[in-house]
Amino acid sequence: MIKKIAIIDSNEVFINIESIKAAQLEQERQLTLAKGRDLAEEARKTADKVMSVLIAQMTTEFSIFEQVS
Image (cartoon, rainbow, N blue to C red; front, side, top):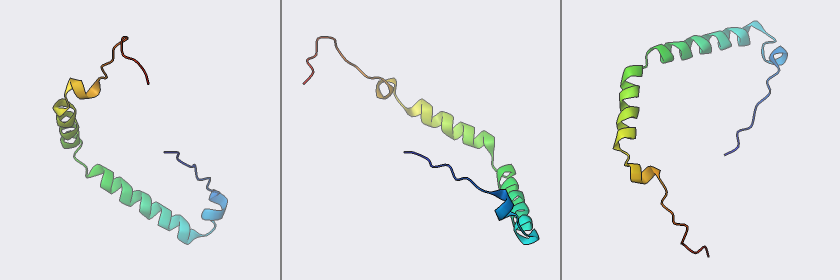
């Protein structure tokens, strides 16, 4: 998956005070959402997922004697 980088010209985006205020409000909203996350719970869930995966699922077995077709 290739991500495209969007180049934003801030001189065009923030040409008026309304767009500046809207951007500030969006930033505050995102900060509020980020502060509301329970990072410890997310870490526990991630650790549980990692621990539930077997080593055999994370490794590849091969032999030098196998013939490649």
